[in-house]
Length: 358
Ligand code: UD1
Image 1 (cartoon, rainbow, N blue to C red):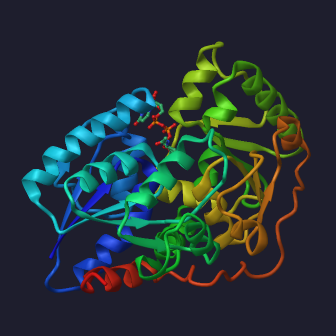
Image 2 (cartoon, rainbow, N blue to C red; image 1 turned 90 degrees about the vertical axis):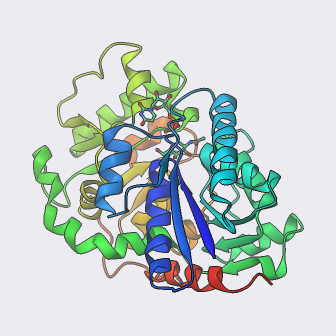
């Protein structure tokens, strides 16, 4: 059996590495990895791939950046060529980025089975490009790996049920558990002159937060007020950096550290010693929940409600001013235990993938 794994953007690498590794332990299955090139910067791609010890991809498609339609179309066209060349039995895609949908569409049109890692998440916010990508990828998939119980309900509502859905747990947390100790030992916070458990970590890159200059200015102002209460470390995603630079350099604010994006281990290191995290990322809502670090999400909704009910996540809603008023207390006690977020999701996915189709 030949499985072809598609990765394209930073979060894909983190979700796919545990499955690719687990498949190596199965005989009779061959793996090929294709990197679409949606993320190509050293910091967003090579460094993260290196930290996760993923082997060099077999193909790099170099689709690069662009408008959503053009980017998705480039992945579709390039993936079709790759699939005709490799003729895999199954294509594995992960998450909700444009590369995920482009690759799933290419496989579907060639009649190749598709397995989707992280199926069934729904924000019900159709203005998010990721929601479109999730819904359509799930519709195209033959085997849907879910990480929390509500995903099966979401899929059932859309008529996807039964044998195609496998509740396997969260492979992003497999990566976290594997590298947690190493990340702790890195003490990445020292690089930025802040003390463990005495800084707020911020990541914001959603178009809805950063693409409008007025909203971005409100966010910057709220971060400035937050930094008066506690040092802030903000690794700035290229999209956000570009929007900030459009109105001059990121402003100087004492104790607000604008820093470059970083590799997986350094970022994990910063997460685990933060007082709190402010984000609009999906993966960070999950990682902070698994680490027991309070997370404040600058969005009106989340496709990951389990992080609200069982984890450490709080939705801030839509008002950037709320950032400056977050609680600055670490959570006492051990991290929450979320069923099947146990570091073994990759093994469960691999075991199911090698079974004959039902
Ligand atoms: C993408 C995903 C988003 C995910 C995020 C993780 C989609 C629709 N969005 O958003 O769900 O949370 O990745 O990081 O797929 N850029 C660089 N270097 C790179 C890649 C991008 O400078 O290596 C810049 C370019 O200016 C580009 C912009 O970032 O136009 C946006 O990149 P893109 O991949 O289109 O979307 P992300 O915002 O990264």
